[in-house]
Figure 1 (cartoon, each protein chain N blue to C red):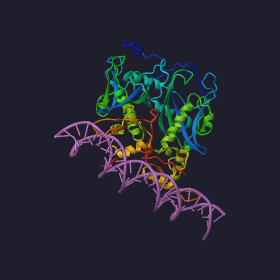
Figure 2 (cartoon, protein in one colour):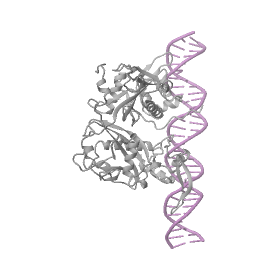
Figure 3 (cartoon, each protein chain N blue to C red):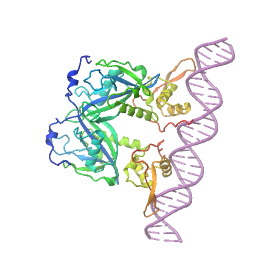
Figure 4 (cartoon, chains in turn cyan, orange, purple, red):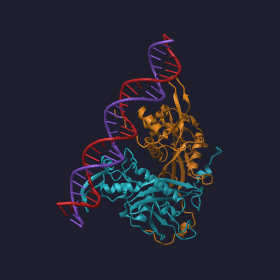
Length: 246
Length: 246
DNA sequence: CTATGTTAGTTGCACAGTAGCACTAATGTT
DNA sequence: AACATTAGTGCTACTGTGCAACTAACATAG
């Protein structure tokens, strides 16, 4: 029970203890091996938490330079991948006593989708290693630092969930793409096949994409190229895909 | 460009400036007037930001007593309403230079649904006022403190959106309820009528609710009482309601 | 005791979107 | 010219919803 007494001591000078505040980014792309996530290796310095372990890219909020949380996330993304116009959305925040050995900490987590071609991995300032990890295999073994495994799993389930009714997979492709390529991105993320005919009518009737001049040439029938109708905002479908019951 | 030089100075002692960290809660309920949100009045003290203004209930994270962000949110909810088992989900976080005149700040926002009957509003420790505001009318005029209008709008659109495909409105009702009462909650939140027949088949086929012993008696045909099949996790429907045309 | 009003709950039909699958179309290769 | 391969379309069956009419069960007014 708090007393109704004035708390001026605490409130007037704003010097009571504050949590450590970080921003982390879960960056996804699709490679040959399927859905991948970007991880960075923590410095080997034994004074740091989880030396040599793998973690999500991120770090402390720099209150002198970062305008807000999202620009902080964009900065970190750019530092690691060179990409500066990704699909970026906030995932959530994790905070508590135990998640960082250095004390009470809170992290604001963003999740990003980038086309594989755009990423040019860049070793960080501390010469850490940066690498893609296939989401289904190595990640579980990787023993992620902090609570980053939990965060990553939340990001994966958010992505898997949203794929069912949004255009998010389009952000895993370059600007121009064919409908087959788009369908492939959906299938990789959902880890199941989609009926071609239903996919096409659904996508085309939702105004997600606009056909552009040009065809994808190849060893067989050329395919129409498309681009996102409005790259700045994802499309939400009215329904979900149904499970094919084999 | 950062130099690859060691930043041990900064990183080893953890005394660089940190953002102010708060937790705010958007608490919804349904009253006669429709969807309402709980606001608290800020102290009249001119040394405080937005003296006398209305704001979302919340406050600084107390790193000596709060185990984590969610328990901090639960504590604040309990303090204002007396409710301790609400539907509670994280909405997101807002952080930046300008949102609080006292400096760089970040808030972790939760949103809660509670049955109107359960709430017993309690004046806070600082003798602030606490009140329900109908979401559609007074809120816009209320000139909310900080960026709380933006946060509230995000909460409303999250709620409106999720209502279309989840069982969230059930958490606005007491433990036992009839299907008509449940439908009414949906209609209040969505602000449009739903087809009775479609609603019933949808709800009953989704295993959202379980019939229990007892009927709601009244001046006309008694109605079967139901409870949530699993109160601990919301149900997601496979589809969305369609707009009734006309 | 019956008629009436009101809300609970059901039934049947029309419509819309998808799954499933077969079909046609267009290219390079053999 | 036949074939393999991928692009793209057309048709049917099924499912869930919108819509509207129907039946069911109570309280109350006369």
